[in-house]
Amino acid sequence: MNFALILFILVVATGILYAVDVLKFRKLRAKDAKEPLWVEWGASFFPVILIVFVLRSFIVEPFKIPSGSMIPTLLVGDFILVNKFTYGIRLPVINKKVIEVNSPQRGEVMVFRYPEDPSLDYIKRVVGLPGDKVAYQNKRLTINGQPVPVKKMGDYLHPERLYYSEQYQEKLGQVEHRILNDADAPTFVPDTVPFPHRENCIYNHSGVICTVPPGHYFVMGDNRDNSRDSRVWGFVPEENIVGKAFLIWLNFSDFSRMDFSRIGSFR
Image (tube, rainbow, N blue to C red; front, side, top):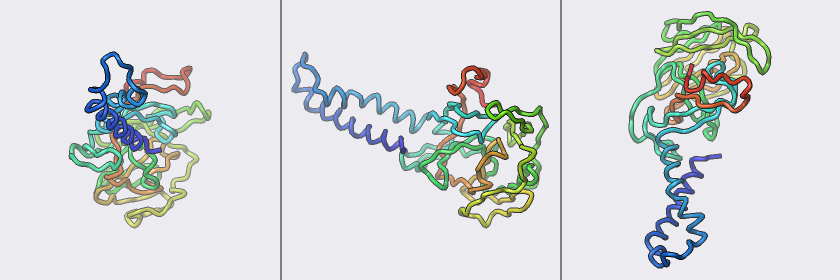
């Protein structure tokens, strides 16, 4: 469902009703006369819908985490906020950038339109910038020939499935965050699909090596062995970017296990 398009249609429809009422019919009604239904249920909602549309399109948008690909940073059911202007001002619905602001940086968590199906929003961590050579070999990340620093931490227990993953502290760019690896998962990349600039990637038994084309980004999930990301379906085009995720504000999934220290953070 294209919620942005639906919201835009509502803004236009209620805006027309609002304008017609203000410019013509409001002047003809007696001061104590009851508003007709088309005003009460149409025109009167225009200011509220307009405010929601502007906030969601240009300022901030809520997003719910649908999968475990970003564990342990983001859990299934987390509600987060996405900054819509930090990567540039874009026209709503068509997502065309009209004002340049900043570009995604390594380590940032980005929401984008899934290249294989732009009607879906995905969330991953930015790993490779345009021109970078990204190598993920034997479950270790190297960028432009430089190994990304990692530090072993205590194993991570997945509460839903009751199994442990190896946990590491990784420093990607200026961002320190946690990643997970499963010891029994293969090092090669399974289930790859054809994608634009596929020739920029080399697959082998140890993983994948890719050179990021201009205007594209290489993204990965923090739950490295349980994430379908750029290793599988390719690069994220600049025009698919939605915004930068920056805040966890709630998780309704299970209050009995909710770690409230995570609220307001992005660790």
